[in-house]
Image (tube, rainbow, N blue to C red; front, side, top):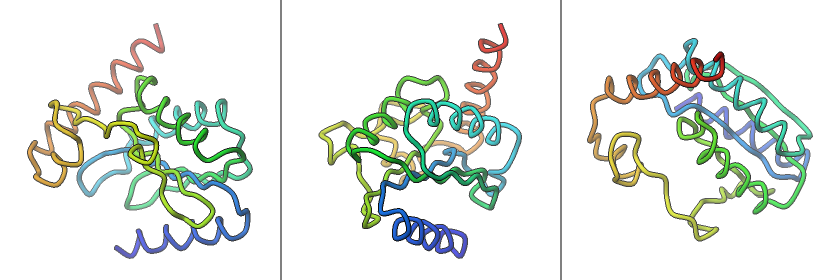
Length: 160
């Protein structure tokens, strides 16, 4: 909880200083140990993709109890930025493994729903991801296995 409050305060300071869109990215990795070689490598890859596709004014990489995270201040129309992040989540092989939150200048989060886009699906079934998370429908080890296998397949393909 303390970690989250510190993150929110950091986002608020950036929003006030830059008066631009703020992006926060983390890997959707369950358990307490979110900081491992898989999550760090996923974040490093997505950092490259984000910085190639969005005009960035500020970037901060951090490792904490939330695992590795990226915080950005971005230039451009917030809806365009949100659409670009959704495209990364949906089209990049590692995109499904991420939470990419986009906030306006007042730190209001822009959601898929705000843009008329369907919510994300669960990794393991066809249910909405939020429903599975709240109901704890799947075993933690099954989710971790999915994430780690997806990452291994990406590395295998990338190194091919």
